[in-house]
Amino acid sequence: MKRTASLLLSLLLVSIPVAASAQWPNDEDVRNPYQYDDVENGQLLQLFSYVLTPIGMGLEWGVTRPLHRVATQSALAPVLSGDRYVQYFGHNNNADFVPPGTFDPAPLNLSNYYVRSPPEATAEGRRPARQAASGARTLPPSQRTFQ
View 1 (cartoon, rainbow, N blue to C red):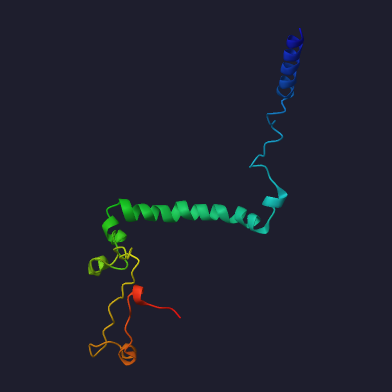
View 2: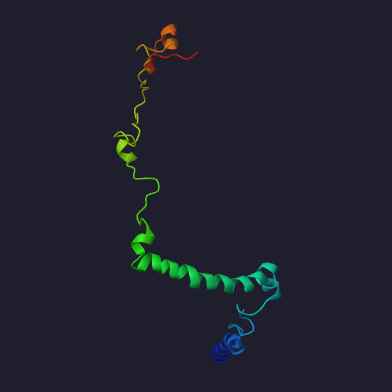
């Protein structure tokens, strides 16, 4: 008996919001986008748009659309359309001028040894002046001592 009473009570509690229509919006809660709102529709630019929109639509449908039709779908289309496939900056194939291997991944030295890059060549074809003047020689990592 207790189970039946608790089941009926829980069904009653669950059905109260449904019976009260609390979960569905009524017509007053839904905003009508066509309803006049003095805050949104009373602006000066909005008032100008009421006057200018019919003029703009008349010009679009009365002038520009017929001109577009004449220029694209009539016997005068080849004369009025001009070039259809214009390349404003010209055709370029600069990618063909890039040397091969330019965008390859950089080589990785995965060893623990320092590998010196080759010296930069100067105009005379010898080592740069600062290396030649110092006469210093690079030692392998095992022979280096730190002070």
